[in-house]
Image (cartoon, rainbow, N blue to C red):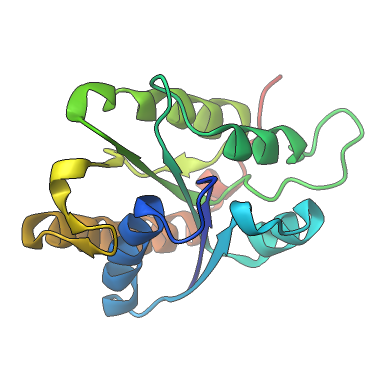
Length: 180
């Protein structure tokens, strides 16, 4: 099982990456391998879509700005095909996905809903619920999650592996397509 984590923070090695590492620790406990792509380092969008196509699950991580994901992540999703209207690819269709968002306080927790709606409704991805939202108080420092936050992140990673296996083994789920 291959998990791709896409970090949409404009800062390399930021708190969103730390949160993703916590989630991936859980997915690795469940037997998955992982790859992390930080959009701030400027990966080629076509290579990101290639990586999405071969992954069993994709994690989308971002700091939260005004209750929304970062512009970097939005830009990537705008460039991602859905297999409709002459498009030849649909790298998220029939995939398990997870959302990780970080913020200064818990007040922006519902920002995850915007991204969940786009992934599930627009791309026909099967999105793990609830998403993982970590606030500043969940960190010891930029690189370290507090014990409870680390356990929660790892639980999300294990759940993502289970969801990805269920989706991969379900013809009904993998055949769902975007409708519009």
